[in-house]
Picture 1 (cartoon, helix red, strand yellow):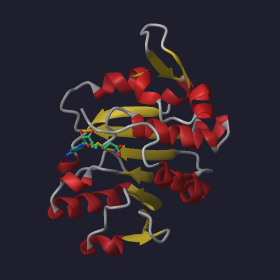
Picture 2: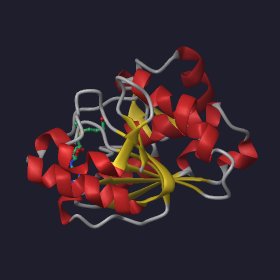
Picture 3: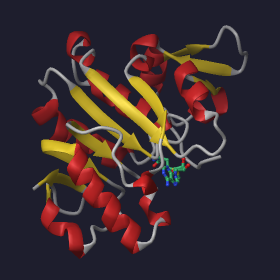
Picture 4: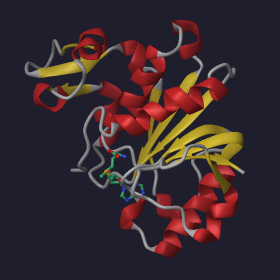
Length: 201
Ligand SMILES: C[S@@+](CC[C@H](N)C(=O)[O-])C[C@H]1O[C@@H](n2cnc3c(N)ncnc32)[C@H](O)[C@@H]1O
């Protein structure tokens, strides 16, 4: 199973609130791709960050496409149910946990994410090495802790695919240690120094 957890690398995800939301937050359709989403911890964290920073009505415009190669064929069910073992939810800030999670009535020892958050995340099985985007006109792509497993040549092709999938003002977010290959640096403009937030050039 993939290594991940809720609110992983919050400092980077918080860039969405600071830099991305002011641009895409008022759109009619706020389409986001969490590529290499694992079992939903990342896209659900992003959905919670967005909901914390926008009203209920605007939040309904958000759609997060969570995708993963998912060799186990289990992620779709896990993500749609939104039920996770209590011990995996320890790092979630207490106020957020109280607001968005409740004990799973059907599974003792687990908590389920609120329906409002669950409705905004949709899982699709997808291989990034197909180099075909799940869709275009995306406002934001988050791809963290995935590309490090690829060759440089594969990474370049994935960055080109992401560029194609973003809309004109779209953003790309990766992990801090993932540097943009020089072959694709002309496709993206860094939004902040020392952080991996880019805007489609
Ligand atoms: C370490 S997890 C990262 C999860 C989350 N993005 C995070 O940062 O916490 C890496 C994920 O990438 C997925 N993955 C690996 N190769 C992939 C591929 N070719 N296409 C799509 N997903 C892939 C794995 O299945 C796994 O769920």
